[in-house]
Image (tube, rainbow, N blue to C red; front, top):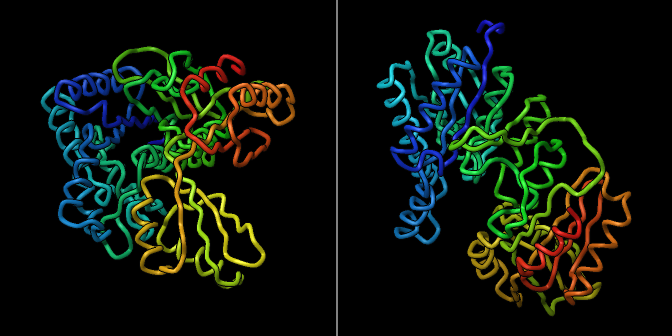
Length: 398
């Protein structure tokens, strides 16, 4: 490809392509950006609306635990519908376009199902179509492994597809479009005091994504940082300035607070004598089954007494594992909240921690654990923390 020609990558999420009316809005935006900003445009699309969730539900009506290879084949269909419909629409509007699946676009992944990692992208086909003057519309969220099987990249995987393609094409930027104006100081669905941020560093955005905020996929931020691709999060449905994510660090103050209620605290005990080998075997099973265990601790030197956290969506898989592999273990589960306060350099600002602890004490919250590093204070609580307390923290710290 002629590198003198400006290339940008646009990604549109499920809410942006949810129906034909919204697809028309997306098509007009793509055409305008093609005319105004870039010679070459690649568009990455998610499945329409709740299509992926609906496909998962359909699979579960057939099997409680669907075979993972077949589930990936099924889930990849959602993005293929979106890409084909958008390409049809762009062509009708007089803008030459072609749709490509993940494997047609040369997106190669490892062999993990539902959470595959992109290992390489052969851009030969994409480049050929761009040089022919076409807008290339890609199915996000999917690729192909070395067995030529379809794989999917997990939740938010279309973000990763977009940034990875942008990096491989040496694009000038990657726009992530959704139904919100950008990245906010906290989830605007949880509190009305949330404010849009003009910019974030890659480190801050990665902390926000890793803490469970449903904004950008963490892998897409990692790729953006590695290849220095500016990521712009903005709305499909207006022309407001979005949030720019890049390598610029601006000040040492709180940028974002994430409240994650989608976590379960798990406690497992056994009267059997504790042996490091037993602990290692359990952890090995967790890794092989991709349970997503975090904060794993054994609290006794004599017997097995371990606690950890898992995403709520992994509960069924964990319960099945314990029942089949470790039937003698006693287990209990409780819903908890993890609140993460994020901003470059906040560890060195004692007033942030002091103000946080004051709010916690005033509301008599029980802490399970606390993690502090250069850009994050993360606290786990024994109960679900209300949005009112989140709002109180926001008003105190931001």
